[in-house]
Length: 193
Image (cartoon, rainbow, N blue to C red; front, side, top):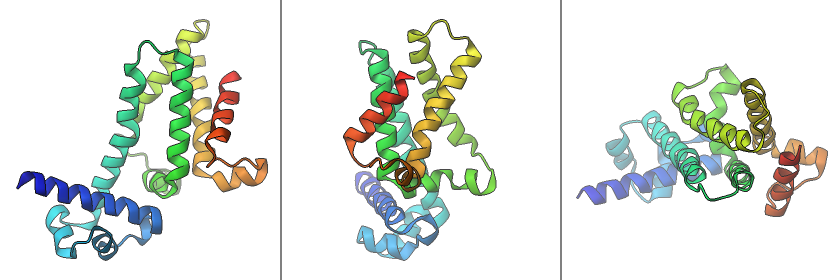
């Protein structure tokens, strides 16, 4: 029974993710999620009690799978070349932003629209930033703490902005960020500086 319940919750969460990507967060309805999941609206209310609760679960799930699990992978390979693993991580993050723009907007909307920074969001990103800092420190021991933090912010901002606004940057640069080779070259060039 518990497996069926967890499978149903996962099915509904995945349907909500799909609906957010298709329609955007502000157009998300319980009815559209139910249709996508192949269940009735009552099932969604049973498992999540409200649309807001469902959205919170979606954000938690996508944050866990999109950030936390990737950080663990990033940190776990102690044998890998630090800059190669950093490059792979930044490419992966850019790919996620390009492929899931409406989820990124859902996660960051309050930051951009209201200047509200969710504590849990920031707490989940801190290990990621510290991991990047550690990789850079290994390659550039001459950098002091402030310089390392600046470098991390520069790297992350340089990946985040084209990820959030790909059309804007593509119109300037003619780069197709959906293309893996373009993302690879972009991140490689970024890390060379």
